[in-house]
Image (tube, rainbow, N blue to C red; front, side, top):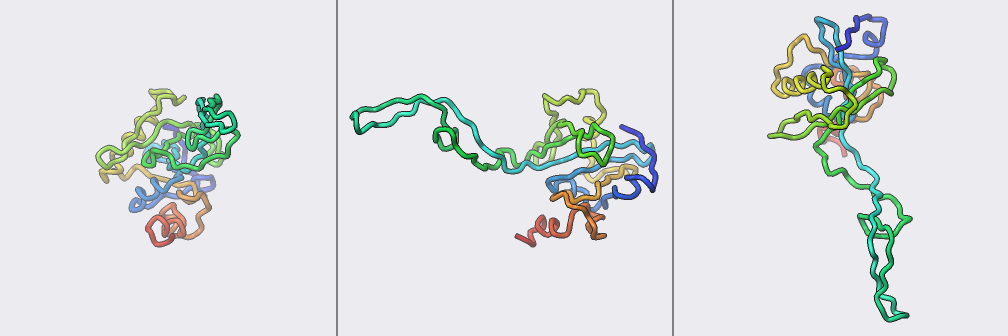
Length: 209
């Protein structure tokens, strides 16, 4: 883990705020969460991003022999071409908006660039799978992060202790000053404690449409 001293005049003392332990689970699985794990004893830190899959554009064409009956020639005509795999209309064809098949699989990215204010420098390391009702970290086989990187083991350890409610007091969870669901800046004091904006927390609790 990267070691960084705490300075109240820097990003970590002004924008980044600790998430109240009571709201940690809801904060992490809000859908677009960026957070940093900090060891308060060693000041070591790792920054992650957990995102829920959203609707995607579906535009996959497959080769197919299209059969149609020609009433002029009174016979069946086969015409080769590429057709949309969803509705089998020929190209060119507009996109389809569809939901991903794995709604329960959150994607996990690791912050490679050490500048917390830079939105670039993320690398996908894996996803969360549902096993016996719990989130389990699964490594992405095509990740560019080395297998001996401590960030991979840390994420597995963190999820196990988080869901078992056994996180040590020395481990702090920081948010980046923005809502873990919509990404907007947090200004309400109670929202800063949770890491989720007031409108988003109502939606997550089912109080708003």
